[in-house]
Length: 330
Image (tube, rainbow, N blue to C red; front, side):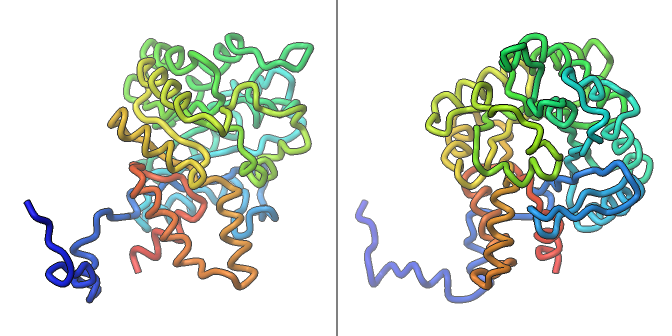
């Protein structure tokens, strides 16, 4: 078959008007594609985060209002991250297992106010450890895999019992997804989902997040012994395969924009729900570009989010979620 050529074929025809551009759009972005990460404070005041302009730590008393805002904008799910007080952090991260810790109180607060919004909760020890690592460490500073997994299982159960809908292991320990799935089944939490941080890279884009959860000054060493090497793509596919085999309902690639190729590889290989996390450094770059007069916030936010959808992401965790959802509803 001979393919038509110019002038019989003019691709600009379908770009002539807004209605035809919409009709021929290959991908559609809606508020239901977004997950809004919220930082939780243990106090009564809103705490702006200087490294993340426009993002704050929210006290428990204001979480219900944030949930109502999200629901009104069409955002289906919130992701929660606690800023645990320093005096409650310890080498073993035991505060993570406290059924009345900041995370669990936040879960109950939101569910009591807006029962039908989804809650995704972070399963990792870095907000609870005095050394800032995602797991238990030995005397030499090495993060221990199997003992950490045991604690993560208990942490996931505490969150599930508080009302979490999706537990999200972000620690990158081997085997923890299977252990958490078995414990959830045994504990009667058969409908609690697992979104595995399956391909989480040792990235330079996490800096503002560590300010938000107050771990930057605590972290001893780095996380390269358990987070992935940015040079590796095939390893990401192995990680995803393992997590799916162990019972993950969905998987995540983190960070987002620098790893769109990984999102595409995962989607094409496994045909499962894959989410991307537009991390703090990505958010901060947009906001600083806007502050410098070098970019239009609305346009940049929507273009970057569409890039995730085009790459194959089922949804995106982004600090711009509420802003983007309101733009879509405008």
